[in-house]
Length: 336
Image (cartoon, rainbow, N blue to C red; front, side, top):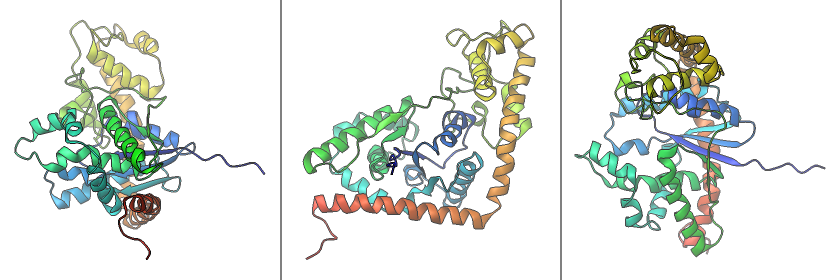
């Protein structure tokens, strides 16, 4: 009998705050659908991380369900993937605390995101914001993940996760899998529409990004207002023409056309026609996702079923890890 090959496990977490953007779709969600047959995938809606900033409870609950619905509408199969809410698996918080005790203050104080977020939220620089990377490490290590999809801004956090896991394993033996970064073969770095030298971010002002749930007229208006330049040529030159290059990247990622093909079709026609073509491409991509989102978000029984299944399946994996961790540390439960 042929032995079944064990799939590698991927873990990814996304905060439910803000609006998921076209950048999230191109860089992450679309790729997640391509991974579900090749890997054992867990996708966590990390609502505990969201609490480093004060949240309206009603709005946070809505945002969590909206994020899950977008995941499903983007093609993630809840039978092939584990999709769940972080706060519904208490082991995340427990392991976060235990790993706090194996993480040094100096390591956390060097985290770039802590410095950036402290500047943005100077009136609420809390311990959770400081220890955020440790909870992120717990999220990953709890499921013995082999791979973590990350962008450039998360490399520092993954390095800390690996350092803490290696430190713990060095003391107690082979407890945690040491995760590697996963960089998708398909994707593009989508930049801000107003500051095309910066990545498109759902935490920025709304006119700088295209949300997955934006209506067609809103999408068209945002793209028409996107920063370009004044020479009116459609050529791919990220250094000298970042705005045009960004729009070309978006069209290429969604249509499969090369930069040369796009340039050949639109160079010399003016930015107005080019931007309208980019908008048409984005709208055609997002409309079926939006229609599926409307159907799924209205089906509360289905969402409850996905939520319950995800919690149970994630909890079963987390429980095995926590039994091992607790035994190594000498904390209950134990048998007399």
